[in-house]
Length: 318
Image (cartoon, rainbow, N blue to C red; front, side, top):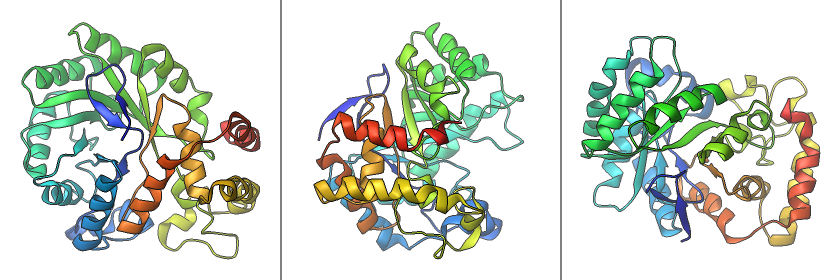
């Protein structure tokens, strides 16, 4: 499997990762959090084991989690399944209202305990907050790198300017800002217009794209007459005329995919991967989804096909 550095860090990663937000068995109030209600509960440990095994078999060895996913259930399940496996784990410093800059070391230790590890490959700040000083937090992140508990430092949902602040603070400690994880897909192209993608290019930072399939709207599974269930049906992609507007895009994905015997989802992911600075992390709740996602790595798009998709989705740059 071809790997590349994550940003300018020493961490070598595949061109595709796996989001495990829905993994694990949440208890108490965590069963009712928005992610569980939108995407459905856990498919069970055996399905998640198959997803992990199918991903590893295809060389997709980067798994992204966070403490806020079902109140730690995702980290615990990933840690359980990852025992004895040679995989890369990315997790995050949580954004809950009680988090302060100085809470980071304790939060990291709690994540390591849930994961059953002594170090994490990528540690990210999940959301910027007025309660957290970016320079001070990056210094604590650098301390964790020097202590051997973190291999690479990233951020998530940071603006272009916030990225610059984080990058500068880490640079003073001789550590690169490896990544910024933001929403990015054919139906959510704001990183191209808000300065985030350009700043990634400038600073040598990898953009990790979450929701790369627009919460499923790019899979072709849903239509105006067959909307998703649960809270997801109220997301912008699915309410109002969202699916009708996306239908020509899905049709183009099908047309391009037919040339390669690939699905609309695989073509949509490939459009992101054709940009060397972008690493998508689609979710996978079972082995079939994981294998389908990994199939994205077995073909490429022509410049004309990339341009056709670019033109078809320019309305989603706003």
